[in-house]
Amino acid sequence: MSDQASQRLLILEDLQNKKFQLQSQNNPRNESPARKDDAPKDYTPAEKTRLQNDKNTALQQSNKQSDGFFITQNSLFGNLIISVIPRFNSDGSLANGNIPKVS
Image (cartoon, rainbow, N blue to C red; front, side, top):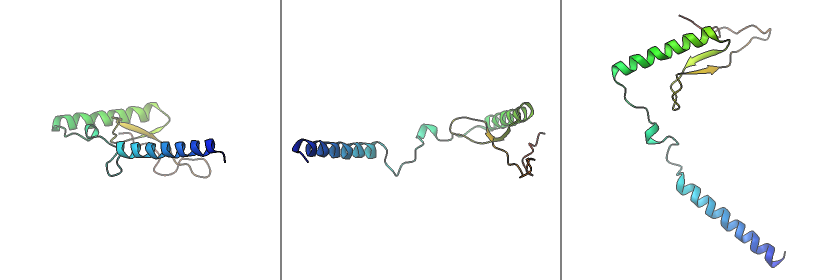
């Protein structure tokens, strides 16, 4: 190898090492990816009741108005419900437990 090529390789290796060091400093492995701001907050009883009612309403409306299936799920992103993929039997019919329960 020429002297220039080996210098380039050394520079690239050095840059790769520095990149790794910076990434490990910015994102320590012992910390969770969620920030303290994203941690679940303590709700008052009135807020908990309202949130549960909103979840139930969203779930019922989604299951009635859509061909999809939805479940309630706590989310760091604030989603009250998420869609799920139903399971089908080999003959194409819905498997047991996949029919939405609408109250």
